[in-house]
Image (cartoon, rainbow over all chains, first blue to last red):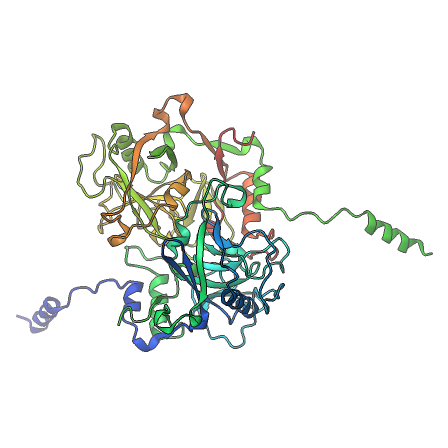
Length: 293
Length: 293
C-alpha cells in the first residue's frame, strides 16, 4: 500500500462538509457590536399614524441641512397636526402633508431652500460599491447612505426604495419640506439631483407601501377615498428619553459592511451568482438598538 | 440705427418659445398604430380576485415553454379553483396558489420542468438598451420583453417590477408553476437565472402590490390574516371572444420604441437629465386594445 494515497484518502474522508454559501445576512449577523453606529435622536423623524402605526424616518442633515432644519422646526411647532397621507401611486411614491396650501409655516422655516440636490465630496468617506451604476459615474456608500458620484465629482443621495423626498411644484425651488413623499416603487432614481432627498424610512415602511392607491389625478385620493390621518410628527430628541425609538446602522466604512456589500453584490445563495447588483439592492443594514444583542 | 442689430432683435422677438422637453410618454403617444402588436389571447392569463378585481398576466412562451404549457393546462382544468393569495413580502413578492401540497395536477403537467432560466440568442431580435446593467453584460429588449445577455451569449428575462416567477423549494427543479409570485419590490433581479420567469403583470398590478403584508414566517399570512380568494384563473383564448381582455405592446424593434427608450434613459423632463437608466425603469409600453385610438 502506498502511504501517500492512504493519507490522501484519509484527508478526503476527514474533510469538513462543503461550506454553506454565505448570504449578506450572515455578514450582518457576524458584525461586531462596535461596527454599529447609533443614529442621533435629532435625526429621527417619528410619524405616528391612525391605528397605532408608526413610521420612523432617518434624516440626512449632512446632505440637505436647510430642509432638515425646516423639518425639525415644523415638527416642533405642530405644523403637521392635521396632516394626512393623501397620495399613493403604485410603483412610485406615497405622499403626505397638509395638501394644497399655502399654510403659514412656523418661524425659522426657510420658504425657498437652496437646491440641496448634490454636494461636494469633501468631508465624505466614500466606499465604492463596485457595480456599474446607470445613473452616475460611481455608486458608493458614505456616512451610512447610498450615494452616487457624478462626472465632475459631486455626490448625491439616491432615490432607492424608502427614500424620502421633498414634493414641489414644477419650479425647482418651490419645495420647503412641508409636503414629503417616500419611494414605494422600483424606478425612482430619475428623481436623483432633481428633487431634494431628506431621509429614508427605516421602520414601518409597509404602512406607507401597502396603502390603497389613489384614484384621482396624479394618484391623489379621490373624494370617496379616506386619507390616512397622521396623528403626531415628532423629532425623537423631543420625546421623553424612555419612549424614544432608537436605531443603529452598520458603519459603511467597517470590514463587516465591506463583506456585506461583496456578498450582496454577487449573491450565490440562490444558485447562480449575479455579476453585480444595483446600488438600491444593497440597502445599508439598520436595526433597533438592542434588537440583536 | 444699425440694421443688423435691429434684425437680430427682431429675430429674438420672433423666435418661437423654447421647445418643451419631450417625455417618454410623448414618444409612446406619437407612435403609429402599426407599431403596436396585439398579445395573443393564448398568452394572457386572466386571474379574477374576490371583490371583482382582475389581474392580467402576459405569458412568455418563447422563454419558458414547458412552464407556460403547465400553466395553460392548470388554468383549463380548474386546478386553481381554491387558490388564494397567501404570501406578501414588502419590497419583494406577492405569491399565490394552493399553498402547501402536494395536490394532484391535471394530465399533461410536467412535474419537473427543465431549468428554463435562460436561452440562446438565436431567433431573438435584440435591441440594446444603452445603459450599463449591473446584472449582465448587456441590457436589451427582445420580442417585447426586457432581457439581459450574459457573458457567453445566453439571454434571460429579468425580474423587474411585475415580473411573474415560479415559486419552488430550494432545489432548482422543484417548481411546476402551480405556485406563482409577482415582484412588488425594487430589488428582485438577483432572482434572474435562478427562478423561472414566466410572464409579467400587465393590468391590475395594484391589486397585488397594495395587499397587507404577511406577518408569519417568510411573509406568509398568519392565522389572523385573510388570504385573498382567487375566484377564477383562465387563459383569455378560452373565454368568450366578446368578454376577453385584449392588450397590445409597443413593438420593441420600432422607431417609436427606440425614441421612447432614448427619452426614458436620459430623462430631462424634471430638469437634470440622468446619464442612463436601469433596464427596469424603462418598461415596455402596454395598453388595452382600442384604448388610445
